[in-house]
Picture (tube, helix red, strand yellow):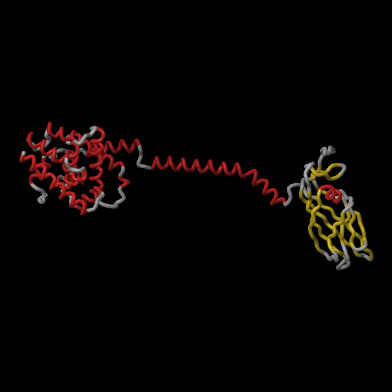
Length: 155
Length: 211
């Protein structure tokens, strides 16, 4: 069952979007409640995984929109103040700043690739873009992060 | 994620979630509540369908309400053949030597009333007209030289020469009333006969509408 087997992956992506572990878990729950209630809308076109990932992304982004008046800097500030994972305090700010410099699509592609271990085709299907765009987006995002983090390290 | 730069991986690893326990029962319960509040998606559709049917019924009712009177008028014209009771009269003419002719006149057109004084048009003040369909039957001969109806100041030639057959003519106002009220003469060949007063029309009371 996708929900049980990939629950932590869903939560990781939601957490990367929300920077709040509890809200991330809630978002995943919301996503599956919504998916279950609207299961008749999935017509078997495309993979069920992509449909569920899309539900999780939408739920997390909805929560972010509703609960934050979101300047991009706010999750960054939250990350600085309260690192939720393995960051140490000094690295957290630099990492969050680097991520904040990415576009929304670049962040989502990275999250799905890194946490969900999705292939380019699955990411493309989830986000409604072409697989080639996924590859290019990942490349751009990595270059950006390397550059930003290198600069941060040099500083 | 081997293609990721270790540095990038380090950035993302900070938000990785591990050890969270999924709660499928919570999902089922909440989804159940959602479905109870909004059973599947049939309710909105059913409401929408019912609303569409209601609108369609109202439209049909409106069309019927508007069209019915008009349809009744047209149907009366089409099915009855005439808007008011028609008239009919038959006049026999003896031609001698056992031969005879019979003229049947049927009329329809502007509404007629009839009282003790005879026929009159119901809509005074406007031009009235009646269509007369005539049928001539000859008995004992195949043809006559002429058949015509003479009114005061007007002659209606039906045919010349004539054999059994029919036709149509129109008379207006007083001319029509003369013929209907028996104040006309039919000539067939050399024989003449007063046209019989017509029967039919809408029988009214003794009062005749003022002109």
